[in-house]
Image (cartoon, rainbow, N blue to C red; front, side, top):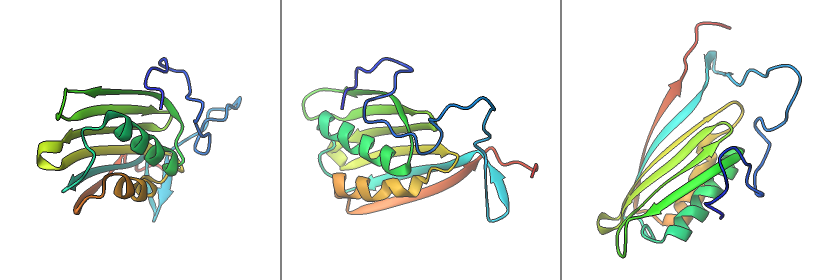
Length: 151
């Protein structure tokens, strides 16, 4: 939960499941699923009637768990609280891309962005988000980033 970890310095809780290992040959993190080749999946998630959206430490913990659940490696995190009773904005920079959140506790609303590449699964973040924020409703859209015609 250390939001002060320096840029490029992996958190102690970091995972290397999706690409943290170093090799002498460059690894291609594009994936092919259902015959489609792309860089990764980008989820746009809206949580409605959600809870604990102005608790910075809680938001940080939930996002870190969600990121790790995707199989990603957390490199850096930064979260900002806008004041008593106000929302939180935050981002986790991942070796595989990013996770971000912006909350409006007065409306019970949170806007999240989860983009991961390689073998990471952004949908694996959903249980942690649901458990952490107890939303009444979840809206989700997926965008495949870096669609490629190359095999």
